[in-house]
Structures are given as structure tokens and as C-alpha cells.
Length: 121
Image 1: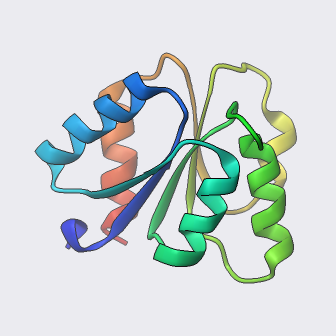
Image 2 (image 1 turned 135 degrees about the vertical axis):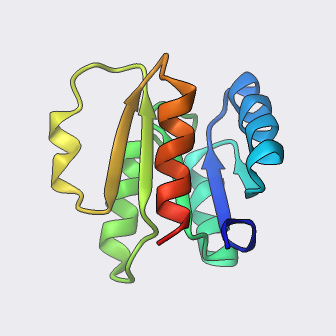
């Protein structure tokens, strides 16, 4: 069941965090938050989330740097939904654990559908 699986949201934008929290209450998601890349990696180690929603542009470490660190760690990373204002992210296709790239502003219905599909697997 989706409510039993943890979703880690790594985004420094407080408005995005509030939006995700509102959606999670409606959808029954179990969310935790990280505000930068370093905190994201630490929470992944601590919480072992079922899904990572990762912003590309964050302080201390970009989303791309987080992806490189996850890949180098050797352990299978959680599936990743990457969120970015950048339009050209073709270079990130090399990471097989990215299940979806959403460009800001993104469609909330599409986002909810992607998260729910991932959590139902």
C-alpha cells in the first residue's frame, strides 16, 4: 500500500515542499524532506525511501551530483523522479534509476500519477 512506502522529497524550495505535503495528505503518501543534496544522501542512508523526488538545482550539491553519488555507492538507489527548470537534461538519461523527468512548471495530475504508479510497484 502506498501509505506504507516512504517518499523522500529533496528540494530547497519551501513552496514546492508545502505543495508536496498538501498532495501527500490527499494521496496518503509518507513523505520526508531534504533541503539540499547532502541532507538528501544522509536521509537516503537513514530512511531507505521507496521513491526519491529530486530537484536538479539545490544548495551544497545539485541533483546531478546526488545521482552520481548514488551511482558510485554501489547499492541500488531508489527510483528517482527528477524535477528541474532546465530544459536540456539529455545528459541525465545515463542514469537508469530515473523513472521520470518533470520540467517546471509541471502538471500536477501527471506528477501524482507517476508517484502513485511507482509506489504501487
